[in-house]
Length: 128
Image (tube, rainbow, N blue to C red):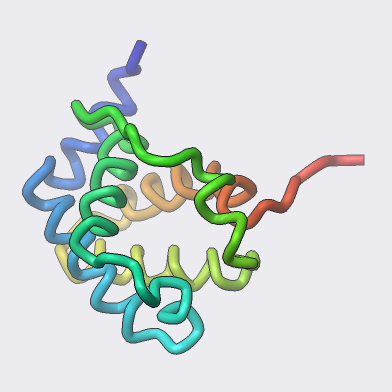
């Protein structure tokens, strides 16, 4: 069951239309970043943006079910480090801010993305 707070984040980000704009803006930044661009070489950008939109909309409580590949599996072949993940999230934060998203909502969105870091990087975060 989706909590009200989860669905509210999707709405606070502007819903589907605004999130699609944010994803487009983010990929302009990511694909221009020499530390990240190589990860996307040979990948259809239109499909990539569509899958990222579905993933983010689902992660932020939107009325979308992400049906793409499992995150660990799809990212395993890329040797993505925590540094790469942080840069990607930084571009996402910049895209949110460029689209006039409130600082509280930027923080909430980044917090939600942070939950997926281990799946994207293949790292595990174990205390002890």
